[in-house]
Image (cartoon, helix red, strand yellow):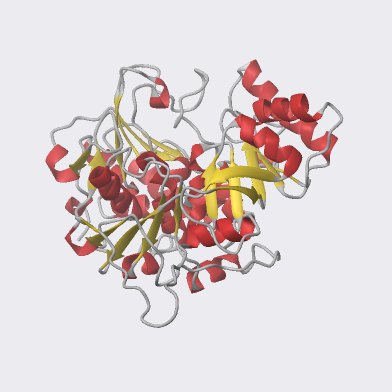
Length: 462
């Protein structure tokens, strides 16, 4: 995957025209300029601002300090409040964070606040969603051509919809709450051309682990990562979300995939807000272009303790596991669980290690009990997981991904070796500084659960 510097010849007639990338076009539109260039600082109009229970109180505090206790947000229909991180816990401070969001939503008449009051039974809270990045998509807040910012680094997930989406800090969020604007530097763009028919043992998680392993965790620092090619075009929306979700693990400012028929079909029943997609010009300039033939790739893992510590799953087969975790914004979507179920279905064995199932949202949880797994004769994910001896699907949330309070479900409260579909494996993630985390796709996670060792899913897929 050698980078290829792009050689664009100037036009032969008239003045030399320089095109813009998708990200640059979104910046130009949002800053009301005809053209912008990488490195330029511009005031950008925000279309959607999301915050959650961990960062929301801080952002609200900044807003009130700077704009006054009685100030109103710039647009109560463009602010989205999503409790999702530390929900199912008895920790009083974590619970108070959700109360602060609720008070602010009531005070500001925020239209989109996905509240939870009964933590004992999430199903008793019809408004509660779960993981913010998946809920944003499911609830129609992700739209091509728009600017979406959120107080969470994985807000970049929404770039799958052909929009600029990035994580911001509480200070920026407090400012945007009051003004609807942000001062942003236009990022230069890296272009990743992924071609070839996706092998049936690979998922988007393998693709992004390949890219991060190639360019490193700092290889895209403050750059846009644009994904194109026949492979990307063939991916579902959820798989595209996985690809964009982990650009921040390469240091990326944002990930972006152009909107197409797949995008528009997904959005059909989710939003009535008009949107206008943008597409990169043929004369657009890129810092570098990487070409990947996906037919040559194999199932991957990121070994401890960094997402760029790439290894082949088959070369880690001696690694003994204590547990497997399937969940998070990266690996807790409906299609992630369908993928895991497909591998478990191919074996009559039971899992050899505790296998935790944490759906991202309430909708995903419902899907586990209602959507039949292809080729299963009508069985659902929950039936297949139960037969294989997995732990019952838990309440939808960010779960143990970050760690959080000691009583968070599936938190690693002792040093263990875990294979996980999450996005980070730094020391301390999932709650334990001495623990070891291997990151992998849902296919690899399910195969590894069946053996108790890091396992290439091809061993179970015929």
